[in-house]
Length: 64
Image (cartoon, rainbow, N blue to C red; front, side, top):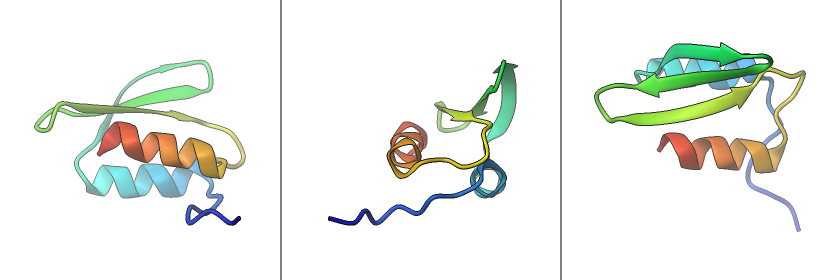
């Protein structure tokens, strides 16, 4: 069974989330934390070569 989520590099996800009003508020190791102060939503993204489908799904659930 295939997933509807693609495997993406983190910079594409970050670029999209910045357009939605998220800003980087902190980073610990290879994990960056982005927040949207107006909507009070937070998402954490691992800065690795690729973001797996399940991880992307989790990121989108956190930020939406």
